[in-house]
Length: 448
Figure 1 (spheres, rainbow, N blue to C red):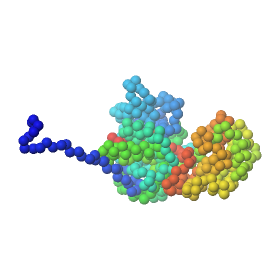
Figure 2 (cartoon, rainbow, N blue to C red):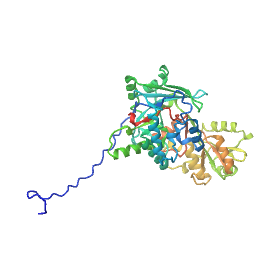
Figure 3 (cartoon, rainbow, N blue to C red):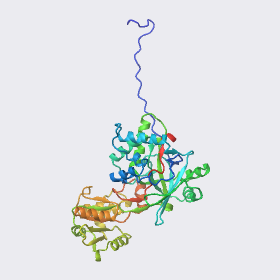
Figure 4 (cartoon, rainbow, N blue to C red):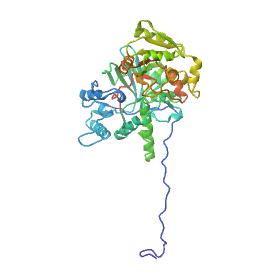
């Protein structure tokens, strides 16, 4: 018997216990948008405190926003890489958020609410919807439908930032087909006193109301439950929400505020966004040569007068009967309109496994048929580049000795039909505007 052992007991070997796998997060069976206590700026004048979304601000834009106000929200969403204290950029954002709360630059609202948020343009277009905490569900569940693929880099960046700050700094943007109690509540928000009513540097009038009545919130919840929503903007942020949730549950944290994400939900029929095309540029390829190649499977119209406004009108008219594209030379030459694409060649060129909805999109036809089949070009980001407006596309064509390919906007119902079928659209297919302004409402998990 070993020294010190009890004469009455045999030594007992340690018991090896199997690792306990934390339970996966509960998966909702319906579209759920919950009230939350918004963290908002205490200042009455927000003109120098908000910013555009993080993914549309370049380095000069960051510097300008920082110079506008020491408390501009850009310091949270795009923090500088290093500080004198040696913090990384994500730790710096977290420290900034804590400091602004401590100094009451940012203050949480007293009561949880769903927030009605409106953006009104000088031309009369009004976008209005609900801001709330969306209960997360993976795309396979068919409740929140993406229409574009994501890239690992932006998701990794947002995940590191959102984990460090423990907050949702910008909403994702969802569209749904409404017409019920939620839409009526949004339309009736004018009867309430707004929390915010300001014109901001983007030229839009921004208004914000809080809905706190329990009976009204219950009606909204019941109305939204059977519906589905499509991600209009924020695919990378939604992927970030899902990864953050998975990490917290894998760590054994259980249910918590990470099971939701800040979301702007808009009834596309009542107060929907404007949809714009994202145009293409083919660097180094002359428009005359591309038109010559396209004539093998499309009708090419050389437009009289080379008037761009008239050409865009012709493009819109041609698009009512099928895919159509404008070829604009970077050197100011003739403008050409492609119409009446050969249906048999199109059918052979587009992937057979794709749905009719996907195959009917102009962007699908452009990439799979015009670029790949007629022009015999590689469909990659070096051969085909992207610009968000006509002037930028033409300037890029001139700069690269290439051709701008101008498209009609993808209809919202086309986006919805593709997403509802579980498919993703070709990259850079749609631009929804206006995007929610960053900084009006934050969702800090400390207030959940």
